[in-house]
Amino acid sequence: MQTKSQPYTIGLVMDFLAVSQQAAIAAYPWIGKRNKIIADGAGTTAMRDRMNLIDMQGTIVIGEGEMDEAPMLYIDEKLGTGTGPFVDIAVDPIEGTTFLAKGQENSLAVIAVAKRGSLLHAPDMYMKKIAVGPKAKGCIDIELPLTENIKAVANALGKDVKELTVMIQDRPRHEKLMNEVISAGARLKLFSDVDITGAIGTAIDEVDVDLLVGTGGAPEGVIAATALKCLGGDFQAKLLPQDEAEWNRCMNMGILHPEKPLTIDEIVKTDDCFFVATGITNGVLLNGVKKKDNGTMLTHSLVTIGGETRNSQYINAAFY
Image (cartoon, rainbow, N blue to C red; front, side):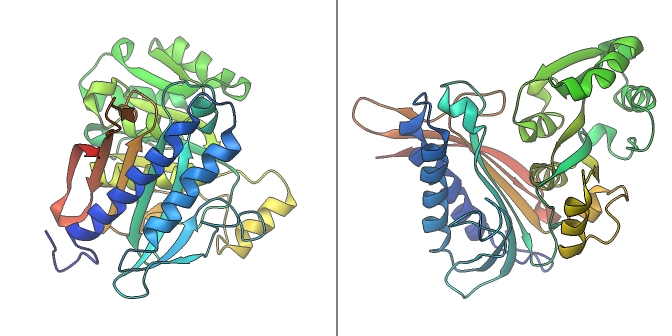
């Protein structure tokens, strides 16, 4: 499944699938234990250990934080055996740590990978986002009012506006957006956390989400954009530095115009990318880890590959 343009083989994709599976399994014992720090540490350790076995020259561009904040999977950490392709890696060992700690749905382990120098080095700050699936690709504009985007997406999907479902994180800062959705006559679907799931959901028919908008974490935005690029969807964003320190952090990470809207091709500068996710608890995208009476661990994962071999697969696996 390798092409001239792709810096990876299907073997590398499967190696990273094993990384997300092992992270999910490592986090499983901490479901409902109300200790998200230990749970996140278990997932992070499993991810790092497994990635260091992969024949690659990997660099973390989105991770657990700066070197002085995170002992592992920190930004610029080098991973792999030191042979093989040069790749950028964006990870969230547990997307939805609070959900996992409370025994709730929608926690998962996620990884985005692209050839070296392709992924936006997004600082850990707020990012304004808008996401759609393949049928509405090219129809969104983050600079336009939400009402206009709603009409454009509905038209692209061949739907009446009143049939359109807009997903927004349930936060006071989004009250204006929620009111715009209702005023336009569209349906509102609120979620509490895990906007990566919401963004990807726009490209998965079974999730029944047409448009995601709102402000959330920039690192999660890069991961979501990678997944949507593989799925053929669209994603636009705009960094929102809150103070001079965050503005300077953008500069230090090479983002010289933080106020500039970003297209999906500016966030993920290549089609040679892939995304893997494994459910930890049950959710709208994936089933969670299950442990059978004989000790067998069952996992449910999503793999999406960009480039000339673009495809997506759900994968069930058993670990004895």
